[in-house]
Structures are given as structure tokens and as C-alpha cells.
Image 1 (cartoon, rainbow over the protein chains, first blue to last red):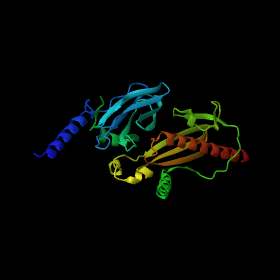
Image 2: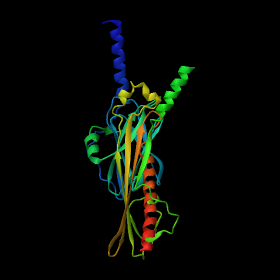
Image 3: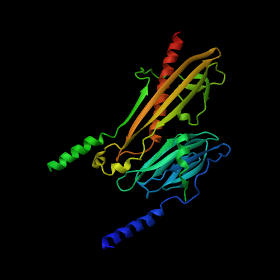
Image 4: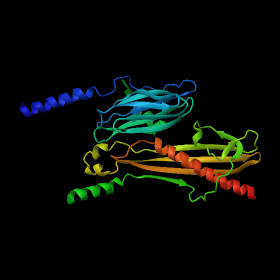
Length: 147
Length: 167
């Protein structure tokens, strides 16, 4: 085995070990929970992707009862379940720039927000978008509960 | 020096690619000066009172019933092809990476005991492209559109009141 091949293998092995710590380690998504009385549920999920896979960001929720609640860290291939009071809530994430969506949460309903990572100057940027429940049901099953 | 200036000029041209447009309809409504709000029983099931037309004033004893509602639809761009953009040098001068839209439709039914007196509608489409200089999500465009729809319905209410009084 040549020296170049050996170095290449070591780099590859190092990368595998390094990136294996980036994914979600919680339980696989099984089903949508029933929201508590007078409240709604928001699922923020992030399908596994190679691009920006090593970048993660916190999911924040801002509403009149919580000026800034950190709901969890959205890593590659993970989801965060957030119990939210009815009314308007802003769900957002930030790295070098902020991405936010606003939901008007109704009692007893569940909502889905899809997260991703887009290109940034120095680090990948969060990209959040509200998706319909059919799309969400298909995609969220591949994700795991965030750490 | 000339090369740097040329590069700067090209960069400025592409920064203009960061499109953020908003279109509200119906368009070309003539503005009517401020008038007193219309008294009616208001039915409004959304939580944020900021988006309720200001030309409506709640009066539980009024024979008029105003039901205001709105819907918000999202046309999402995504980051699935951002990997390809890594090989596109134009992204450093503002080349668009994806586009997204927010569509808001507002509806106001004004009813009396006999039935619907008037139905007013307004819609707003906000288009935004995502590039290296502009990201942000849909919160801002959603709010801008909801306020634009509210203002448009307000103007329509003023026109309706004017017609209603003249009849």
C-alpha cells in the first residue's frame, strides 16, 4: 500500500468518525402526538442531507408567553417537537443569518416546519419553511428525535 | 484598477438580482380620506388583531355582521440544489439560489338579516429570491402581505360606505 493511499484512507476514516457525531441519536419518528388542551404542536424536522450535514442550529420560539424559548438543536436528520400555546408564534433558527417562519397555531392542531441548510459566507445558513402535513408525513419518518 | 472597477460594477449589477416584490390586488383603488369606522358585529377567528381591518368597529347591537378571515399559502424554494451552487462563482455577486412566495387572501363578508350585503376580497403575492446576501424565511413577507391586504380591504370598506350612503 502506497503512502498516498494510506493517507487517503486515514483521512476518510477520520471524516467518517468526525461526521458520525453530527447526526441525530434519539428515537426514530413514529407518529404525531396529540396536542394538549388549548395548545398546538409544531414539528420542526430536517431531512438528512450531505450538503451542510455538519452544520446544526438551535430552534427558537418567540411568542407573547415566551420571548425566546430554545426548543432544541436541529442536527442533520433530526426533528424537534414543540408544545406551543394557541396564537401566533415565530419559529426561527440562526447561524450567520436568521431564518424564521410564523405560525398562527390553533388549539389541538399540529404543524410542520422543514429545516435545511443553505450556503453561507463562512458557515451554512438555516432555511426554514412551512410545509403541508402530507409532505411532512412522508419526510419526517426518516428523522430521529434531536439530542 | 480598471479590472477592479469592472468587477465592482458587475457585482453591483447582480446584487440587483435579489428580487423582493409584493403585489396586492385589486390594484388602483383611489384613496379616500379618513372616515369613521363602520360599526358592526365582528367575527374574526384569528389571534392577531393587527391584521383586522381598522375600518371595522365592534358593536354587538348593530344589525350588520362582518366576518373577516384570511388564508396564507406558501410556495417554498429549497436548499436541495445548494451543493451545485458551490461550483457557481456567480453566487458571490448575488446570483439567485432559489425563490419562494407567500400568497395571502383576505375575505370580508358584510351581512344583514336579509343576507350578504357585500363581499370584499383582497390578495397579496410576495415573491422573494434567496441569494448569498438575502435570506430570512417567510415571517417578514407574511406580515407585510397581511398588512397590505388589511389596508386594501380598509380602502374597499371606505368605497363601500360611500356607495352605501349615496344609495
